[in-house]
Length: 366
Image (cartoon, rainbow, N blue to C red):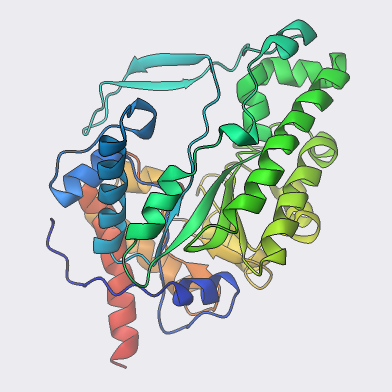
């Protein structure tokens, strides 16, 4: 394990206070969506276990979960994003070589042209996963072995993303106008799956919040028009948010892209309590924080490009800028702009965390 100047001292109540905008202005907490398994292995100085989708037996799965929990605990986190297993059959993935320093050999992504469902015949033939197909074992195993003081933020897929994966983004964009009844049927199927899943997640042991990942934008706008997001996506997200809030938990959203046109909807209608995913080229996190930090919690914002291609000094300087602008509030949580991908040098990632530790240490000694 890489030697760190701070020691694990988890207390998820600190994180919950920040998510409820009642955090300690003298101490910043940190949170991430996920870290690639190559990063986990490099920092723990262990052999990284394969990604969950490649694990075929319970013994390996147990080891993967233990390694994941050990990573977040050792690095000083109060909670981790974790959930059950749900498989979408036949997603059309494209593949290319992975050029990252911590390469996994190949990278895959979803075919944005055409997916498995482009017409009614394919809709009827598709083997739709049901709530009964969800495997809660990974969540139950983690709850039994999670270190004292840590909590689980339940992992929940979004609503727009699966629709884009199933149809292909290009196909979905056309079908909204050419086959609106088919689009409506797909979102109904997604609601039938994710609404009961949300009910189950908030009742799981050691879960204290739910974090939905639903990329709805790109660099200059939303993936589909706000009008269609309001029709198809937001009503389902809102139902899930109501389930989370009925339990007294915060509802977190990870969503990439420029979302200016829909932020009021997300805060006032959908009811998110925190927003994650920021890119300096779209809007630096400080600017977003100035606009919305009194209404919702703000997570992360250390830009992926700086983390991936910057020097350690540049990472430290940018982290300090963000902390100076946001951390003295009661609603900012330190983290990356997106996730700890395998193309981020581990020392750059640790430098970001170390600046958080230095900020907290300086506040405690003044």
